[in-house]
Each structure stands twice: as C-alpha cells, then as structure tokens.
Amino acid sequence: LTVRWTTRVLDSQLAPLPDPAPKPTMSTLAVKSLGTLSDLINTTVDSVLYVVGVDSYRLRTRAHALYSLATIDSKSIEAFLASYKLFDGDWSNENGKDESHIVDYYHVINHLCALGNVEKMYIPPLRDPKVGVYANQILYEKKMMEDILVPPDGKQTDKKVLDIGCGRGRVAMHTARETGAHVSGMNIDPSQIANAKEYSARIGLGEQTDFKVSSLNDPLPYGDESFDAAYNIQAFTYSKDKVALFKEIYRVLKPGSKFSYLDWVLLDNYDPSNK
Image 1 (cartoon, rainbow, N blue to C red):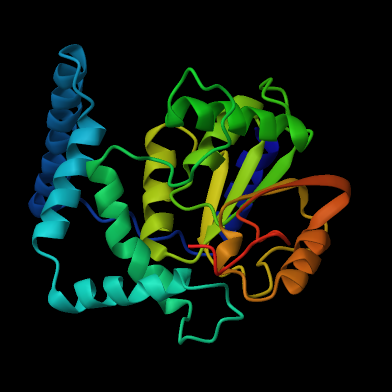
Image 2: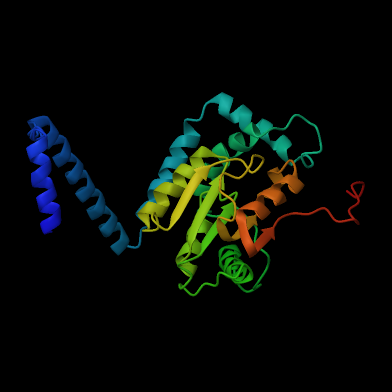
C-alpha cells in the first residue's frame, strides 16, 4: 500500500491531476433509477411466478417465439422452406445448398422448438427406454463426458472442452456445470449464439463458457492444442469436407485428448431404392 501511494504522489508532481469526474446530471440519474426499478420489478415478478410454479424464462421465451412467428415476413418463410434442400443428401449432392440455408432453417425452427419447450435439438441414443427424450439426453451427455475423460464430478476445473456446432449452448452448459471444466462453443447461427450467451449469463455460467459465431467448414477459430477434449452432437451433417474438419479437430486438441462424435452415418447396406 505504501509503494502504490508513493507512486501516485510522485506521478502527481510530474503531471497535472486529471479533471474531476463530471457530476451526474438529472437525466443520467433518472435513467439509472429507471433501470434499477425495472430490474427490481423483473426480479419480483420472477420470484412470484417461481413460487406459483411458473418458469418466467420459459414464459418469456414462448411469448417471444409466438410473437416472432406471428409477425414473420414472407421472405423469411420462403427462405425457411427453401432451406430443406439441406437434407436432400449430403454436401456431395450438388442441389444448390449452401451455408446460408442453415441460418434460414434455424431462424424459424428455434422459435418452433421454444413453443414446444425443446431446449436441445437432437435425438439421443436410447439409454433408458423407461424415460423420455430429455432424460435420455441427460444420460447420453453424462456418458459422453466420461468418454472424453472429463467426468461429471465437478472437479475438472483445469480442463477446456470444445463443443463443435453447439446450437444454443445447452449441452455446453450442462457439461460445464457437471464437470467444472470451461466449455467453448461455436456455431454458424448468430441468433443461437446470442441466446447461448444470454442464457449462460442468466444461470451463472457466463465465466465458465464462451460462445462464438463460426462455421465448421472454415478453419476452427482456436489455436493449436487448445483443448483437452471435444465433441459433436449431430452437427456434422453440415460438413462439406469431413477429412479437413477432422484435421482441424486434431490440430486444436492436445496430444492424447478424446473426441466424441454423435451423428448420422450412411452404412454400406443402405439401399436408396428401398422406399
């Protein structure tokens, strides 16, 4: 404390003191007061709804989705319908598909899923036939954490994990919370990344996760040997060159790291004529 104080005194002798901070105006105080009042009202409403068993986040999300779908313009609808060419074969099928169709598809499907209370847009392997889709997602994700050697014990605080094609980041957040690791997510859709950032901050995982807009068809936006583990959940449908993608995954993983891959594959016995 003595050294820091002495340094500041010496500096003040050599240079003029900075101008004092401007006093807040009435308008500034009014804006801050309104912001504080708004936060207080929102917190109070959230608490009341929670007591009566209503999830205010789900309620706002569904209301926003309903409004967005009710006011969607015809151009967006046409783009959404046209985006289904994404699923007409893989990228080797030259039918005019491109990455813009991915964004057009999720621009609408995100709202539809929100109305149906679907947080994670993937079909999990059947781990337990006695429970539903969401519970099987949880079971699969915990198994995945074990497979990539970042177990769900809350003690992996020195580990960094990459989620390729993270969507709205719900699996990344589950992984971060269960393992204690830092999880980075990347995805091509800006709206999904914005949602992931907002929600992770809301549930207290903003410092333990990060999300960025990026395409898996470009070089991965991370340095060599940046991660202790990585995974993909049904996102490689959109990969144009899987060999190049796997080279990138190898590049960003540390030696000896594990990578988990859950996706659709075309096996040798597939018969396209069998309708």
